[in-house]
Length: 342
Length: 294
Image (cartoon, rainbow over all chains, first blue to last red; front, side, top):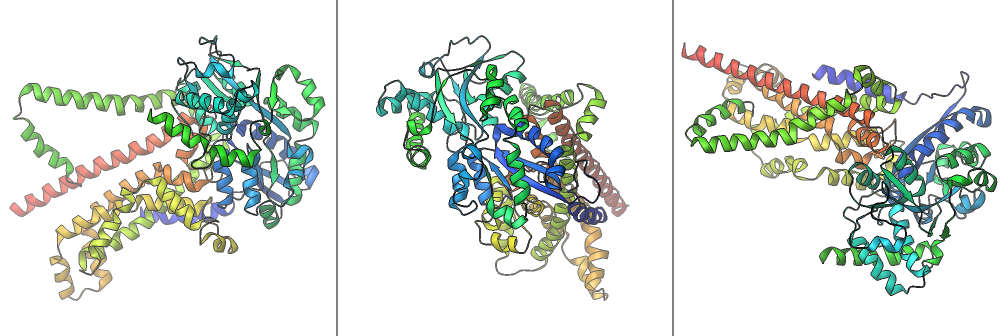
């Protein structure tokens, strides 16, 4: 046993040392580089496709054989991990506030949002409804969610981007229909009383709804909804409310990490690839709304029109949303604790 | 603990005096619980994993690079953690049974801490101390040896949660053995190493092996602590339990069940090793007592 362990230790150290081989078809002698993209929960499939495409063209574009590793989780937790030392070259988080968190800690330079086209937004998205087959409960609008026969699945707004966006979309839907802030508070309090499980991340909530079969409506990313429905083999349906929130998942290059690792040029090429027609087409294929007008037009059938309101229509902006709604002791804590006690 | 089989048997004689209906009731309840909680899920894992035949199962394990890497990582990390804990466990048991010193009880209590503390808390502690926000993180980064979100952190977390197994197994054993044989050896001029290799180790070898087996089983399966310090980088810091969760969340049920089945097989192998070991020590003890009587 002990001898085996020693052998294992030895092979471990050696193998860890050389386990970073690349799978691209670069000619021998090409320097190789490994990037880490730290992203939010439902983008696994998107980045897998994009990374595979970029790895193919990378040698020609950068002169290096590029391998891209992925890490996924709840957006807020992922930001936290990067701050704690997860070596991300790129962050592609769900919300501006999560990315800005890294800027506040000095990992991103000032003006990071303008480092890439379109305010560093290769795509936008929104929050939609997924219901059981045939929509048995007849859910169509945000107002339907607080009917007392309905259970809602949405992840925790404290950790999840999906959770925050769903909260803000719900709150905003009341304001947009002429309601007051007090109306919104009442509505939201009732809504979260009808949430049986609060998962940490978007994918966890999807599993709860689709695989464990809990709840009547799942408030989720548009892209996640499409994937969820495809995987459910006709057991689930997608419902577009007449309005929802405009989600802006920014991409950013983590200055502190790329400068230490010397990967800045490659990372720039990688993120610029997202804005090329090829990159945008992959984005559209995964049901993220491409920011390139031409590509969006070409995939128009996939993206029904609905009124998308920005976070600034709900409150002053992400900083304010964070402090009033999601910070410890904020609006969400108060209504959720209140709701659970009753 | 390696006598547990015998103890159960002695206890069994007592139960035999209980009324029949009580026995049937108790046996029935344990039977149902074991079936519902253990047998059904266990069988289900294998049914799912091998549902498309062994070839498909094998393909799930070898065609995916990230899965391959997670198996490699677990198969290597667990034994290293076990090795560290074996050394530590021997040292701790030796210290605690051979010497009487101030703080001995405290050390004995601390030894159990990894069992008492939730693995998630253990992971968080490692993160808080060795992460970039912690007091050692920035220094380690400067030295180019980051701990969290890479294999040293995984090793640290695994070692922490499995720390008590070997020591806990050895301490009562060494205490019950006493020091007569060792005193005799010393009086005959044995050196410290001779004492350890010729007297102590042969006496404790089965207990030690038993501790190692249990430690290994736990190390392979550790999820909570490892999850916190892993960072979830596919093909780099995902161990097998983390990979199972990830594949499941990525709608890859066949892949998820395939990895889960391998983990389960490893656990079953451990269980088998444990039973064999129990039988073997029992047999040895019986032979020994017969020898003495004869």
